[in-house]
Length: 91
Image (tube, rainbow, N blue to C red):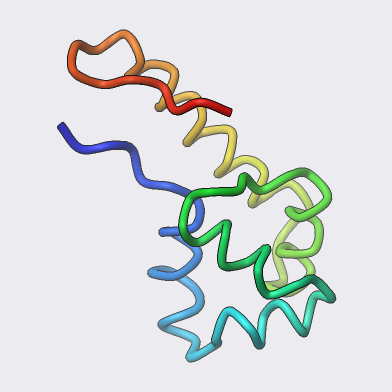
């Protein structure tokens, strides 16, 4: 069974790749360590409200846009946790 898509996958597929922006370039532009963007892309880190504000400013979106995507993905993971064969990742 497939796991729900992550905000990092959305970031890469819908924004970075089509816009020709590297993870490092985005990190530099928003003033964060490139490792943070890498961890978001790889699903090892969530998009916090503070990071959502930075992402929103970078892409010309609302402060809440990316946090909303994170919340939706989290809700899908929780809903799927009750599905046999799927386990909720540890924090």
